[in-house]
Amino acid sequence: MSPRVWLVTGANSGLGLALVEHALAQGDQVIAAIRNPASIPDSIKAAKPLTLDLNASDSDIQRAGKAALDIYGRIDVLVNNAGYCLTGYVEEVQDADIKHEFQTNFFGAISLTQSLLPAFRSQRSGYILNLSSVAGIDGHPPFAMYNASKAALEAMTEALHTELLPFNVTALIIEPGYFPTNFWSSADASRIPPARLTGAYPETDSLFNTMPKKKLEEKQVGDRRKAVARIFELVSGTGHYAQQSVNTKFVRVVLGPDAGTRIRSKLKLILENVDGTEEVWRSTNMDEETLEKYARGEY
Ligand SMILES: NC(=O)c1ccc[n+]([C@@H]2O[C@H](COP(=O)([O-])OP(=O)(O)OC[C@H]3O[C@@H](n4cnc5c(N)ncnc54)[C@H](OP(=O)(O)O)[C@@H]3O)[C@@H](O)[C@H]2O)c1
Ligand SMILES: *[C@@H]1O[C@H](CO)[C@@H](O)[C@H](O)[C@H]1NC(C)=O
Ligand SMILES: *[C@@H]1O[C@H](CO)[C@@H](O)[C@H](O)[C@H]1NC(C)=O
Ligand SMILES: *[C@@H]1O[C@H](CO)[C@@H](O)[C@H](O)[C@H]1NC(C)=O
Ligand SMILES: *[C@@H]1O[C@H](CO)[C@H](O)[C@H](O)[C@@H]1NC(C)=O
Image (cartoon, rainbow, N blue to C red):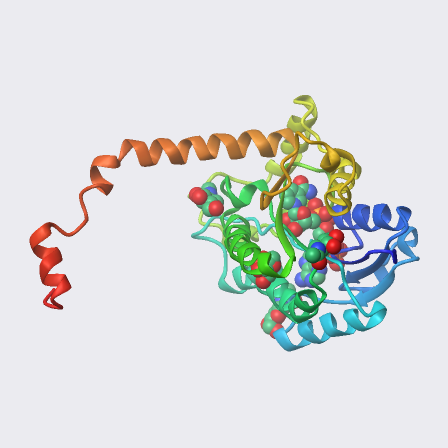
């Protein structure tokens, strides 16, 4: 069997870099997509570099996708990993920053995926893994736009998962909790300049200092090498994914006890919300008389 071919975006840092290192070490072939070719780390020199800025036009991104396909003639695993967290309260974040957040985390990933879907379909195998976040389900201020961009990605991926089932192509949502990477320093760097703050909301200056310390005290710190090992096992049907007790048919791949427990409590809250308002949502259907008018086209 020929080695699997991976295309990983955001391959120069954090989870993406760890995944590329792991896949190479397992003997797979990797195309490492990065926006700045000079930033490709030595540890993944065996990968083929692909220059890709997700804040580019749809046609530029699709062109990069096609160029990636030409490298090995196929791609078995696409990992839409590149992304960042825009920090700011809804009232204070600026339009250009919101658009850049969505372009990178959502629209860019769609353009790249679209450029490869015909190949995936005709190959009748493969994985499309979209890096979301626990925040895509259970987000918190001041990260509304990050939350929203990941929620959009999840909604899209769920639909894509269903669309691709007949073609034996698996689209999944990877849902990590807290893993130390450049993620938090780039989120810190995206904070709104003090001059533009209203002063109406809690300051975020200390957030990025206290958060990692709190995580360390709680011993709630993810190991990115373990996260990417799970992703590799999923694609290769090995390790945890070879075990009978792990159900492999789900669209969400949750990584980290923090992610699992937060998603669980969010779902409980949604259920309570629906249960606690049943009287209201039961009250809005047409009554018999209106329904008859509607059927006659008179509503
Ligand atoms: N770490 C966590 O706790 C955590 C939790 C939940 C979800 N995630 C998700 O995991 C994914 C990877 O994040 P990470 O933790 O590994 O963070 P990271 O170390 O900051 O890596 C992010 C990667 O995305 C790339 N990127 C950002 N903007 C880009 C753009 N416009 N075009 C192309 N590439 C771009 C970065 O490239 P540059 O180096 O050039 O900036 C970098 O390679 C992200 O989607 C993130 O939302 C992370
Ligand atoms: C993202 O792309 C838009 C449209 O080309 C451009 O106006 C904007 O300056 C870019 N933003 C960044 C941060 O590169
Ligand atoms: C479906 O895809 C998997 C891997 O993605 C592959 O191992 C399997 O052979 C494919 N099945 C068919 C019927 O093509
Ligand atoms: C984050 O997004 C989810 C949708 O997936 C939404 O239910 C939740 O309310 C959002 N959280 C915040 C704080 O914006
Ligand atoms: C995951 O694939 C993208 C967008 O959702 C594709 O179009 C798919 O919808 C899926 N990838 C993302 C980025 O969601």
